Image 1 (tube, chains in turn purple, green, cyan):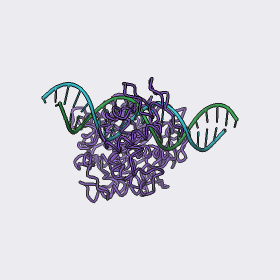
Image 2 (cartoon, rainbow, N blue to C red):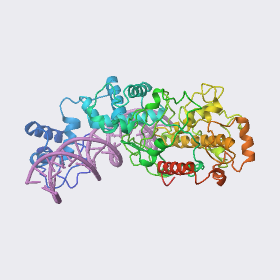
Image 3 (cartoon, rainbow, N blue to C red):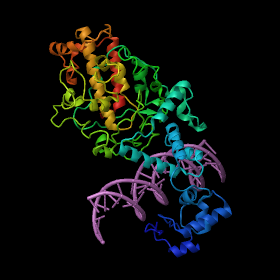
Image 4 (cartoon, helix red, strand yellow):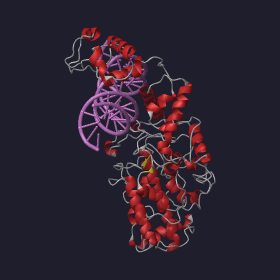
Length: 478
DNA sequence: AACCATTGCAACCGCAGCCTT
DNA sequence: TAAGGCTGCGGTTGCAATGGT
């Protein structure tokens, strides 16, 4: 690299002045690349006076650099015992584990990696994330996810890696990160999804958020505390015995974590560098498969992914905007007959991350039942980074809610009540319901027929709360 | 060889917390 | 106790190096 004092020098003395120390501080500071002469001056100063008091460097050494710049230069380049060059495999592994646990706490991570600076680790990580996004690889290796999951399960109140990091407590308070176990006992309010877009335009402000304290706010927290999901359809996939069910909220494992801190509106989204620690960027994550999840990375998502075709999350160009078209584009839905809900395997995997079997999404073969499972519904609110994926999850959610409504509707003749929620539809009844009722399960705009809800019931109030929760989650602009 | 896009790194910026007065 | 300065941290930007066409 060529050393030069850049033109950022604002009316600064010449480089010779800098080197000779004659560039006395006059309020004019040099910016840009450091020269060897400047390095020498700084090194000499620190050797004589020690680290710290960086603002005095300019005063006493003649460097026309601000104290911050001096500190940074010393810490990142001149300090003895700094390692240079590529990270070793051991370092990489440690960084991954540390990041899974700490998030973007670069300084803390640097404390665990002798010779590496926070800036170096940060750059390494950001570069790594970009690379992995491009190649569709998971940011965290499955074994890291599993390890974290296992350890959190073994010791759910003090989930730790083998690396003991005393400073990680800020989000590892058990009460903060443990996902409350929940069941859905009643179908979800269809109006929860009023704002779910069905156009190609992604929603503004869409995003599920949590904070170091767990879920983003009382509203979203209430979603999990108040709403009871009955796991009667899919006991295995999301059972409480699954190690992947109890991923600590707040842990950064299992998130690719690529939302910017202040994720702008989707329309102008800039999804470049990650900001994993951001309280606004973490998504609720459940039941993630250990297998790599397809990535739809920000700007890269526009380009074809090696794993997932670029069109998968795009509604068909000729979509009519109906749910069916959005959730299951015609070319992805193998059949429009509701009797056969099996999807194109590729599409299904994108949506659900479930292994595809001849019977459908589940290895258990209970495809229809599992599709109707409310576990799956909220299980799809994943702790993910890619908004595209979130959108796809939301679409999937709509799909599932629709099916749940079919389910419920079948047993309640148009009124949501306390009827046995387990009484659900057989696929052969779906078309019949669609034909005989005032709403079409595949059309959200028909979900809100007055006949669906009895407004004075406790259920209706719960639905209202749930709706508010989802509104909070998705953002008012959604 | 020239141009362009991408990548990776170094440095800067803004903010927050701490310390001193 | 408030104000100002210092320091450290995390996010962002700028640019040289590199690779592809």
